[in-house]
Image (cartoon, rainbow, N blue to C red; front, side, top):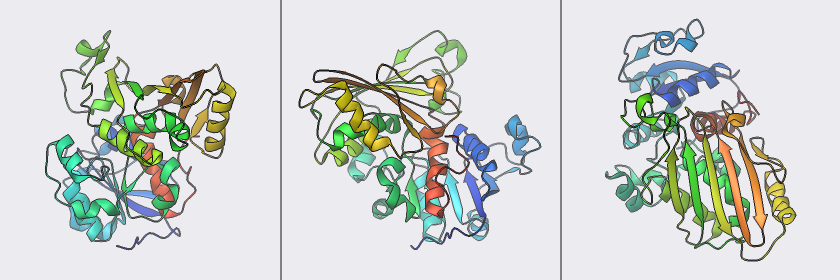
Length: 348
């Protein structure tokens, strides 16, 4: 369906799933956006409560209460919807809104994976709208900026894939790495598990503890494989180990790569500098410097650092999982879809 948004006025936005962490971050960013107006806040909990009571940071800043989802009202009032819903909960809502002319930014994985069988195997549910997957654009602007600008359905990337892909994209797209020997170790703050109660992420369980989990079976691994395979022009299946660390937000991804030929550190760094020179939210650090999650916390930036020795490369990236890994990237895509400056309302 033709995208009905034109870059000529403020856009009314509905946030569906407004009481989760990504909903909260989306509200915070959009309140600072000169061309966005948050019109409706929907959720299945805290119904009737002012958003300032749910999240105290919005007290006196946004005079809206949480409502039960009312998609007929959404369609009438809001040309844009941010779907901050769990996996498998977005596909029907997204398809319905998209069919009725709403431009959708979907935070779930429901339209990220292009292979329906892979999606159904990974998320253990049947995809009810496989015909819409081809219409969805993977919302990583550093790879798909032009396609995002002309679309009406964005599949906002996962947090782990964002950090992983940006760490290695310049080498993968040039086929300078051994595609059979790519190892990713990613350490994430506990907010990545969402706001719902979870024994693993309560303070007494996760504090002073580091835990690897879902090794080889994490649901973001197929997404990483998909995007790197597309860049490479052939199949890639990475080794991916996610680790939970006792911090609130941030992801530090360390990628271990083997080059197909010996290159100097300066030569590898120059390739990254060429690819990321005009990227407003990717910061390539000088050789010998490496990213810290604290330096990108609260921002839409991804910092990348490199170590090169002969044919071995260690590429490290840091992002805020709730911003560049979720809400900030969604706003970046929203800006592109609407024809606004890509950096509007985002720190860079």
